[in-house]
Length: 248
Image: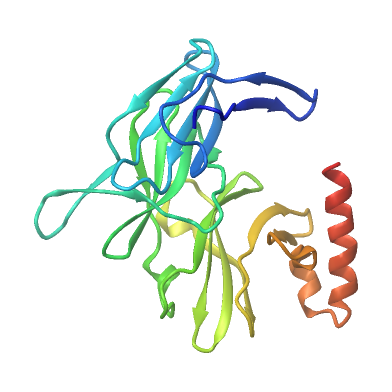
């Protein structure tokens, strides 16, 4: 939107700098920031999530101060027809920033046949790639994907899913121990509850616990180790208070 001003904010120094206007709406866009060692500068990638079929991608080199449009979407080859199929950004209920790891931006994409991919975009060469997922990740998911996404924990690319598993709500988190090696995906944990909550992994503690966050209800911020404790409500509130205090 013309009246929207994007800012690049340094959380350490609390300084900000205005960014030039892009061509499409920022409201339903995902952003990623990374350092390009080849050009010795920072780049911002901007991906429109919902404006089908005009789901443009734009990239900003901070040294140049202008956005460049990437008119194509990533593609895969259909094994039956040999045709190129475009991978569209997965429309999450909550738009998350892209995951930047191994000098590439990453986001979740899909085909209309419910085939899901992790899309990568190399920051230096500016080419697309696909990080493989396991078919087992979607076994038992009988009602589509209410929510799924990517995160970065301990330097590992992670994939999470919230879905219905029989009559229960299920949250499952995988981590890729060796980047771009399909067989290295491991399950960090699975949570089954009698309700379905949209949660996002935010941080992994040294003891292996993971901090999850759910927007809206302040009691939805919790550590995985708290889930089996009888006084879970008290522990959740303590963590929620800490989170709010850190954000001030």
